[in-house]
Length: 193
Image 1 (cartoon, rainbow, N blue to C red):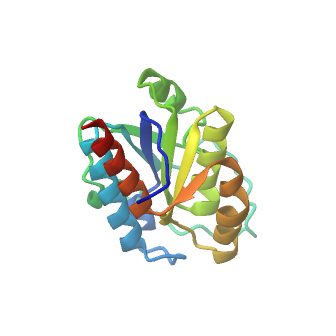
Image 2 (cartoon, one colour):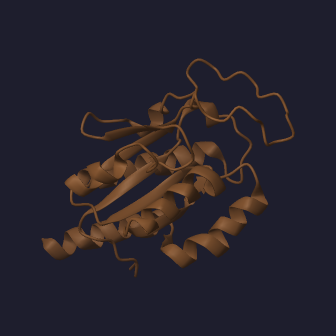
């Protein structure tokens, strides 16, 4: 039995689970991240809880100066921003396109979650130290309870991933496995039956 508690109005936020990152070398196998995302999405939908599918597209009017040693950026494939089909997106899912690291920055996500009465966000996705962490910090700043699915996030950089997992996330929310989250949902359903 899981000791994880989820709010009655929790939402699943999937961060940047899109074609651009399908072949990314990562801290965890990307196909496993996609599979866990699909499983969690099914469970949230089955419990009548919101699923938010977030993708990222570069902001054409964003900064022009490179900060990564001026390495040339490889051309993105045409379908780079497409959500992966493994998510099995449903018409009722919220879709958010962001142009920066955080899913909350200038996207209307907070307003949409408030309209739905959401008090907690469960965050999964890519990359742990970038989109996932920026979104988690923004959720915390807006007063949401927060859970990070530790086996449903991945990063290119092991050191950055480990720092987010050990130093940042435990200070702003709960960390749990996908199995713990699924068990908490099942327990909640059993308690209300």
